[in-house]
Image (cartoon, rainbow, N blue to C red; front, side, top):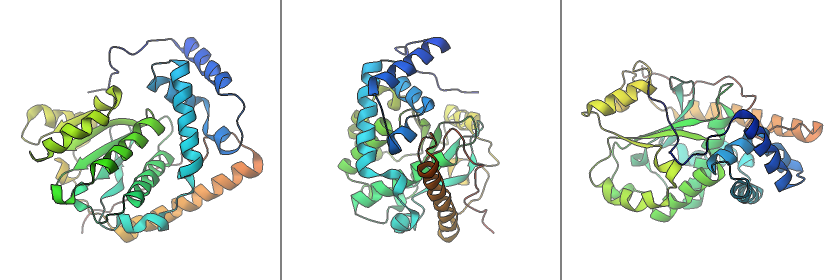
Length: 294
């Protein structure tokens, strides 16, 4: 089975060295309080160190930028009803299935773009990234993206600035949260857009992007290595006939919003040291999203 391997410039260190690096980063960032304290668990610090090849100074800079971003953007406070209009067409949603490693899957369908306000589009994406993290099973810290290009054209494409801002948020403020992203059967015209967008990706993120073509044997084998074809939707080469139901998905998101609000309230009241909203280290059981078509 295919497994992601880091690039050759990754610094290999053993478990005791990792623990030392985490403690060193803790000391470097100094005392924290409130949501920053809740966010900076050992697992969180490890992800930032991993993203910067265990360089404490670079990890500290990255983490401080994320804490500043979270203090202003407040991703943990976004609620579904605030961004639900963005999800009416199912352009981004959490799938009802997982990959073979049990990781949460986000499905993106850029051809179903239905709005023009970039700020709200980004809030919608951030909400769903946070929700994907919320629903990670125990022992998993990463998600998988499946991008379906059915119906995509330059007319419905997001502006370059919006794409750049979205990429920046994913790779700089959610380090090591993406396991792999599959771009399924992109049209030839997408190549022009990709030539620009790929320069916004750092080396680690770039190598996690996989182009998949249904008539290419290696592509098919790659998808099979990550997904059970019985669970994978037809539009990604699988056998499952799934449809996005906005009303049902909204109901599930509202339930998760209650879960988030209760967790935030509990952390504030009891001073528990979790990672704030996302609960990646003590994740609840995944919740089904889309129902098979009747």
